Image (cartoon, rainbow, N blue to C red; front, side, top):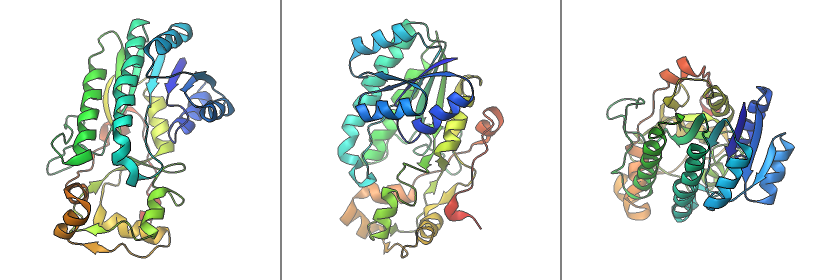
Length: 302
């Protein structure tokens, strides 16, 4: 199939291009920066210089390429998670406005299938793991709520496409090469510097996914039944367990302990919520329908 990947040079885009090429697909990678275009070409895909925020530009590209599948992996995330709050407005605009341009172009030029990156980590599983029927935590404080509302809008958009088969992939927290959560990643650096405390009881459950496993599931989504999928690993783990284990994995001291009141005063209400109110996600549907076989978290291997 002819596949257009928007956001093709990121931490997920790189293994995704390789897997799409290995599966025999003709891959076109959309990017804006020259270095990103070089990366796409080096990986064996056709580089497309384009600006997702320029509607006319995107419509011209989709009309010219005429892909059968569009995969929207657009993000505008910072190098460090500590910089996320100030980068969220640009990220939100790129995903909603830029992604909206790509989505409308795909509908206009009769793309068969649209695959959308979504969130599997701000879901509301109430007292258990979130399923594909679970909503997002739209009433959470700060940037968590802002992001949840953005992803909710993306879910509504992709589900509205009657003319196209639509797939929504709710990815867990990415880890692996090029991500925050890796031995040389930004999270590891902050943790080793003592910037990441364990807050209160650390009740939040996190669901991660290796970028290569996410890429495998994304390729499988090209032929899977339409709908939502939680693309997460099989080790939903409370932060009180995985954060100290992660510190040991990178050879760092154990994270300091903050009580919730102290953390709220120093770091804001959002930090307390983040570590004590998130629920992990159930991957049963992705295991069955996408053939997902996630790796074990390296910091939790026995």
